[in-house]
Length: 475
Image 1 (spheres, helix red, strand yellow):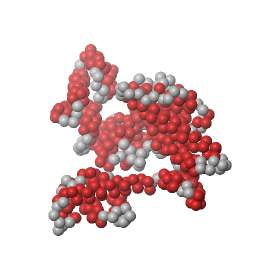
Image 2: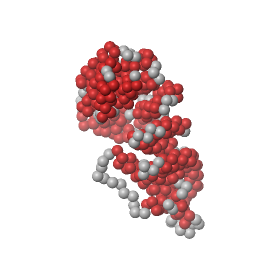
Image 3: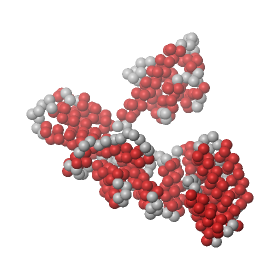
Image 4: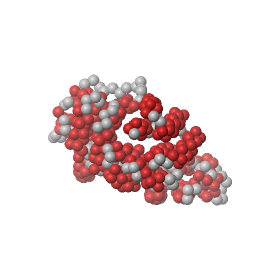
């Protein structure tokens, strides 16, 4: 295939962006090789028709130069040059979407005395852009430092300028804010990593870091206020007051934080709740659900206009866990639209069937799942579990046994699942068969089976199995 490197870059561009790139190539200042425009058109046509994979080097050359013998070196150079222009285009587009960064660069370039009127205009523009910045992130403090440092560099050539010391102080303050917030952000990332993985590496904070942070200058920096509570939660999870303080700081500082920082801190709070749930504190299920509701209310759930299927499923699970069925159904129908297009309908149907199962609307579960073929193995496994449990609840023994047998064959033949995961699901299917037999067994057999399930390391539908055993014992 012709230049995978070039095509991989062009493939990331939308149709609108490729149209803009074509205009970019038309500029003699940016591109002095007309053949590059022709090469782009050939690649663009292949991308639009989804036929670029079939483009061989000789075919591309024939389209470029119908009457010339093939020259591999020349074609490779053209592809390399076009690739470099595409990368420069991506950089320029990103720059164009960040007017503050552009203005700060321009401020530094306009230091000449004869350009002071232009500089004054640019600095007013920078001030306006900073005022309009939504939230005080690490990037905000870096921009503030850059602004004041540019001013300091200019005035340092004329130390007699009034207010020079104040300008130095402002630059120093914003540099400190950037350093402290960025350092804490990295430290929090390390604490989260350390909590889930073992590593011989460490991330040290400088001696006196926490004492320096106590300086009254930083008492009103929103991100530092929140990050300190995050660190407390992660370092001392046994003290539940830290979690309460974190939620209070998120609430009080939410208007001063970017959506990205606010979302990230709320999800860290959710990690804390998950830790407590794993310790057996089931009251934190309510806390998880309430946090998700707050995330939605504050308009910070979506990231770049989209929603990951993992977070989508977690919210559904949280809603079902606290019995908020009506709210959860509304959430599924409203927010499935923001899932990636390729998995959107599968995720909607699966989570809706999961909701119906919790509502004991078993016929609706069968109606939804009966005619769906999933490509993703995760959805295949999940949907079959729900179907097996639904057949059990409906006492559809023959249908359930047939599904168990076909499911077992699927598991054994599957080449994606790990051996441990296969073993877990096979054990689960054996447990379900034993569960059916217990309907005509005595209390002693039921109690023994309960011990087996409780002792099993497998977590697959363990809670449901124990609930069904408990129901049999009560009968």
